[in-house]
Length: 193
Image (cartoon, rainbow, N blue to C red; front, top):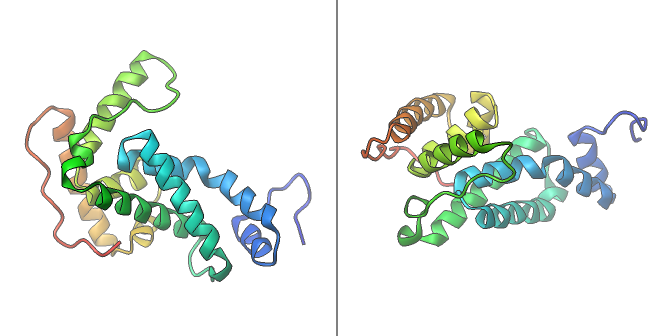
């Protein structure tokens, strides 16, 4: 049963349709979430080509595993977790010599005007100085507007840990934006992505 033409299908409905053989449902899911997944990847990785690679990897993983998705969490939560893990994998493959911190951040795509470009570039450079665990919670909560509980579910962390990383990440981000040279303290309880 599909919704009336003027009412879009829910993610849950699209997942069900895909699992029943409707490949167009996956295309709709991808279209619906592509920009947000790319934005998470871009802010986690700092480079457009890496964000595209991570986005593609996330959707390929999603396509391969969606037939067995049981809906124990929202589709978007599951997809964000896949995207963040794709970013972690890419960062691991880069190794320490080519980490994000060693690379200048690119300006974000399609800025509206010069002031936004400058502010966005400053933010991207400051984000690049954060440890990836702090960056993940800042990107998901502050830039993607996910509630703490949703971020906790995406990252597989207790909400208290997310709140702690948010606080420490915000402090580190403020220092980076102020031009302070001190690196942010690394989180002590990082789970396996």
